[in-house]
Image 1 (cartoon, each protein chain N blue to C red):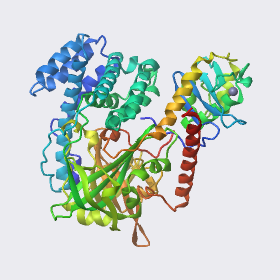
Image 2 (image 1 turned 90 degrees about the vertical axis):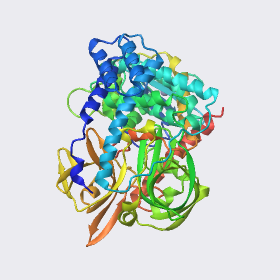
Image 3 (image 1 turned 180 degrees about the vertical axis):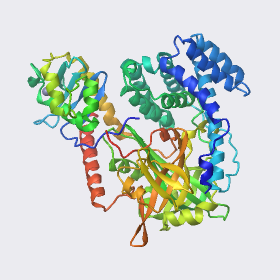
Image 4 (image 1 turned 90 degrees about the horizontal axis):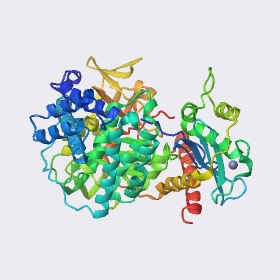
Length: 466
Length: 157
Ligand SMILES: [Zn+2]
């Protein structure tokens, strides 16, 4: 790993982010009657795209928006412009990561949109979601109140029941809950400017029919060697993404893949409850907890390397130590490509194995010193229902993690660590409890989560079906 | 980012939320398994309301907070942390020390709040049903890339 490259400047990065910030700042006070400072931010975004195929549309959108006469199409064009800029940031950072890890580059896989139509109901809901997002953009983060935010609820409820709309529904549900917790915007101490603009922009693009369609799907057979699991959650949703090396049975080159499982959940389902919600839908979580490989038979996979998991196409394989996989199989596995609309720095999550680092703990948090370079470690970004604690990370000798980029720097999210106990390596995995656990604290967490769901189901049984 | 709720037992208060300018939720009846109380306290004015899911007023909530409302405040503090509950209700506890459920309740009752109108109860109840309906939704295995914006964290509210 070329750690020295992690802290080297990336050409054009600051300029691109400055143009993004100009637009994001304009959203703070809303686009209903933009002030000159906001107009400048909009123009800055358009100028940054001047040499792109989007130039004319974005320039017009910026002009109409600055004049306070923008329609939904104009907001969509601005969201597209912002996405394109951050896409270029994503590409530059990904190229840097490729140099750092020095693994084979993913072969080009054709990225034409997949088939499948959007039915009329779906299109209506997408339009309603877009309407809500445009209302938000007009009032701005400072102008939003409970009434503005509440507009999302009926749209989200209607979308959640349709699995095809789950992606946008889950985003808007989490976004709206976060906004509601910050209402009214007028008295908010600090606005998370870039974050909310990110979520708003993602939402706008996903309201375009076809935007959330999956890239072409093929079927693959072979051996899946799990590396670890990344858990994401907001109050009413959870997703677990297993990162793994896939070795095709036909002997062709191995590649990195992900397997995801997600579900909506009540906000009181937390901790071990997250595993309980996901476990029944993906046997891979059990294999991960046990440290096993899985044999896949005609498992669908997207061009991005996302397995569309189906338990009927997988069976448990031999035991497979994630650190052995990381040392032996990971260096030869090619990376994932990212769908054009999904290119964003927040999406970068590249498996890496680190060894022989120093540990630094100070007021800036935990960091590893890798070949003299400081790499910040997000030791909290691991599931609470698991044995991997910040202390275990700080006392580790080897760390398997995801290389990410956040707030202007590369950072490491631990997936598992090896500690030396009586001169022998002992592994601690973030996903050790994914399939269940005999650990005392883990079993207690499982019981608490089971009790919570039992109470809710009992209530639901009595009240929902009346 | 909003930190995830803290785990709590749900038997007594299956649902609590800070929404629509109120602390509101659903409290199980101690005597009748089929009955729940819909309770709420308004931020700022502390106007309170408590009635059954069949819209009968709670006998305990005539002059001041009934036990359902007190239980609701207690569980809200468990779920969201006392600081966030106090801020939301504008029931800031005087200088010194972390607020707790007891202190927040005292601040509000000392202001001699009036009973509010019960019109919100139906809305709160329907939000509870919506909340329960999340249990019925199927997991999916198509990726949700936007969840990368919501990393898990060991920190809790
Ligand atoms: Zn009562």
